[in-house]
Image (cartoon, rainbow, N blue to C red):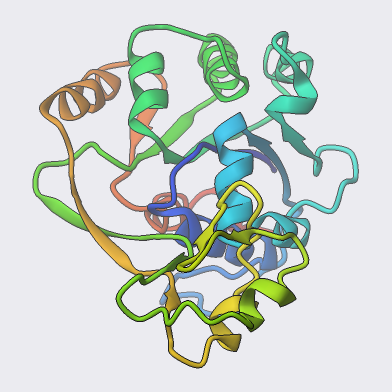
Length: 254
C-alpha cells in the first residue's frame, strides 16, 4: 500500500503525527485480537508545505523523517520550496499511485483553502488532485473543534529566568547561531533546528519549550464542518485515529 503524508505549518499534533507514521512504518498493528507486529508492504511519501518545513526544523523533527521515508521511489520527501508553484509530483495522484492521503497536522489556513476549493500550495494541490481521482483523504485539523487545547511550543528563552550571562554557553555552542541579542538573548526560530542542546547547557533552566492554550475560532470550526460534507474527505480528531480507522483494512495485512 502507498500512503501520502502531508504536513503543514503547525506545531500542534506535529510530534503525535510523526509517532503515528513511525509506528505505521514499523508495521505495528494496534489490534487487540491480533497484537503481534505485522510487516505490510507499505510505502510512505511525505509532502511538506513551506511553513511545514520551517516548523519541522523548529521542533527537531525534519531530520527524523528519513526513518519513515528513505528516499526510494514512492518513499521520497517532497518540500514545497523544491516543488515550486506547479507542484509536479502532485501529478502522481491523477495517476492514482496512492491509496490514501493523510494531512496531519492541517492548519486552519490549509483547511480553509481546501474547504473553498483553493489549490495554490503543494499540500492543497495534493488534496485537490486526490479527491478528483477518488483517493480517500484523511485530515487532522489543529483548529476545528469547540473548546480549548494545549499545544507544545518550540524552544524559547524565559526572560524571568535568564541571567543575561556575558559568557552564554547555549549561545556560544549553537552551531546554527540561532541565539542572539543582549543582555537577554532571543532564539531565531527560523535558524533553530530544535536539537535541544541550548536547553541542556543553560544552568538556570531558562530555555524550554513550554505549552500554550489555544481555542479554535468559529470560522475554523465552520470550515471543518464544511470539509465533513465533502465527498472523499474524512475528518479525524487526532493523528492516532488514522491507525485505528484503518486497523481492519489492508494497510495492516502483509
